[in-house]
Image 1 (cartoon, rainbow, N blue to C red):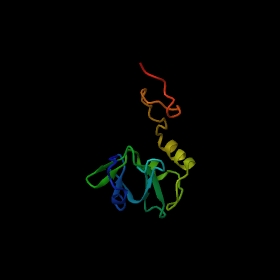
Image 2: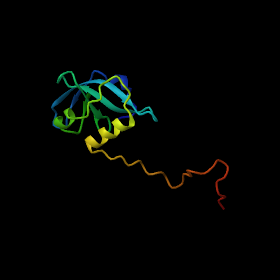
Image 3: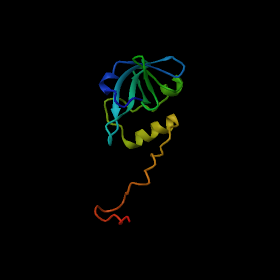
Image 4: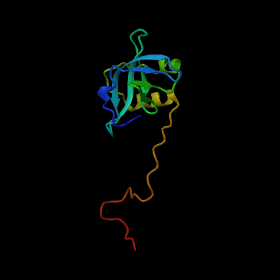
Length: 125
């Protein structure tokens, strides 16, 4: 998803599944603790006033609506953690598994030197 989107501008927008079926309305947006990037959205489905959590990546904002690349049934069966609370790492892991998303971190560039104490980098000729 676009990372320059203000998460507050997502609240109240309609969300649709991969087939164009309406899922519901975005109720809350959850930011990544480390980066502050919007990571999850809680969608008010209307089903028993339950919110379903969906990943914002790989979802897309198209013509003012959120297009979620998953089936409506999978979304409605997402783990229910309630809204208004912080998602724990364990809850996020459950959501990643539910949607079958890859948890592999991006590969670090070979030219970055991690694990070295500042000032102790080896000399380069």
